[in-house]
Image 1 (cartoon, rainbow, N blue to C red):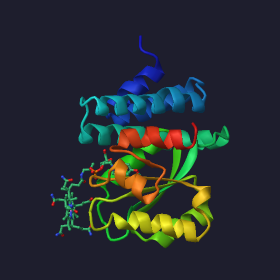
Image 2 (image 1 turned 90 degrees about the vertical axis):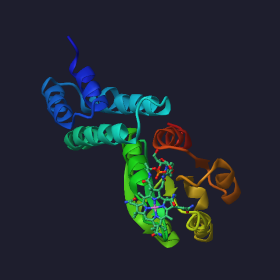
Image 3 (image 1 turned 180 degrees about the vertical axis):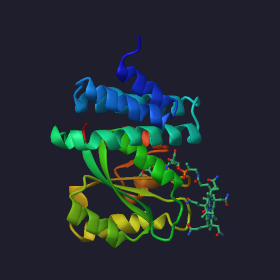
Length: 212
Ligand code: B1M
């Protein structure tokens, strides 16, 4: 018979949020510690979702519904994780850069990062450099994650990095960038710490950037 943690994992892979909610409650009632449910249930399943996406077995819709199911389980688990004093692996301020309203990819990246154990400060879309700077100043973030879908808004990634430098904050945070027109060469050119081509690899990159 499948263990409750296995059922949580397959519920996430199937995108069945109601099953995930039910099984997370069941695991808690069985006395499974919340950190174990997080690591062995939710994060393990999202790692598998990322692998399936990279291998071309899952596409964006499958990834979105899996992430939604993971979030439903995480919502139940969060208060227990706070009680257990479980710290996130890092804090990320994420946003689509100034002038750019595309948010589907950015939201997917946020969900995968959450699934990888990060706390997310989602700044939304059309985020001016000074708003990223404020988030680093006031929220103690470890990573600034910027998305751009328009070639015309990509320069705002560099403008944000420059604003972080001007505010004397560049050494305090890692900067990662992505979005359809963005490349590793562009990341190197503007001085970002990393680039990822998709949400799954963004989660792996973020963990590597904080040494998790
Ligand atoms: Co717009 N749009 N759009 N659009 N739109 C594109 C991007 C475009 C390529 C379409 C085209 O012409 N073929 C084109 C850009 C051309 C260019 O700059 N070279 C374009 C244009 C021109 C525009 C407008 C200017 C159109 C107009 O009004 N004349 C306008 C701009 C508005 C603005 O932003 N100021 C506009 C508007 C819109 C809608 C509002 C209608 C809508 C956005 C809705 C929304 O996001 N809420 C929209 C859409 C949907 C698209 C397309 C069709 C799809 C984008 C998308 O969501 N993809 C797009 C064409 C296309 O890409 N085929 C297009 C799915 C998503 C999951 O992928 O965002 O690439 P993506 O994210 C991926 C990766 O890139 C990566 O991970 C994600 C998941 O794997 N990733 C990261 C993303 N962010 C990352 C961050 C990371 C790491 C990885 O680290 C931090």
